[in-house]
Image 1 (cartoon, one colour):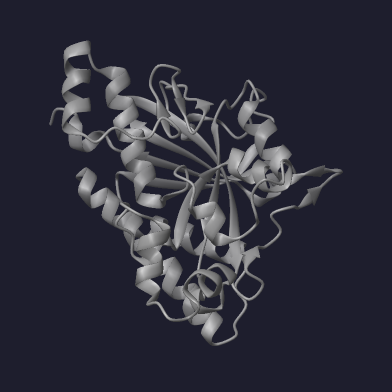
Image 2 (cartoon, rainbow, N blue to C red; image 1 turned 60 degrees about the vertical axis):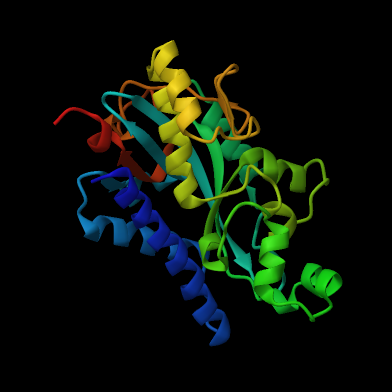
Length: 289
């Protein structure tokens, strides 16, 4: 599978999430974040793709769960990046993310994600997966800035300049843990779709594949090859990738020799487990046939 085909799989997930949540909202049907995650897992499993492999942690180990997903993106040639992911769904009616602040066993869920990602066992980049549908005309930002007189696509282009998004591209987005900490800890960001998505580091799901691909190729390449990569690809903002500091989204990006599925669920070295594991292999496109 080519990188382009791989991206298309994630574009499908993104647009399907937007339109499914739109349909549920229009028909007053409640869909929980866990349902969206489960349907995504089911879709990827049924596709049976060699480049996308999914694994569910047995329910009898639920007491060890530390986060929703751990994704490995990379290849045996380029190495693997591990991402610890907590999922949240946008509450379209109340114009905020549901249960962004979520106490668990005396602590906050974002703290559990942070500790999970920072643990010596896992050392992942901590991310939030955001499932979105926005009734744009009822959003405060739209009413304030456009007074209902501007087309929704006009507002899309002014909110996200130079990013070439369609609304459905934002059905499944990714943002780092630091964004959620700005909302919950620093109180410098509102719990609303528009402030969170106005940040450069909040991206659509398919862009996570591009970012991982770019970082791994740069780390693997020699200086001359790295310059060629940089010249042929638009470099990502340093808020997303900083090759000097070896960071992605401001977090240390460790290139592992093996994907997350090589972790044994009974291995004492890994006391906490994700509900789901996914391996996204971008190597088929680059490695010798």
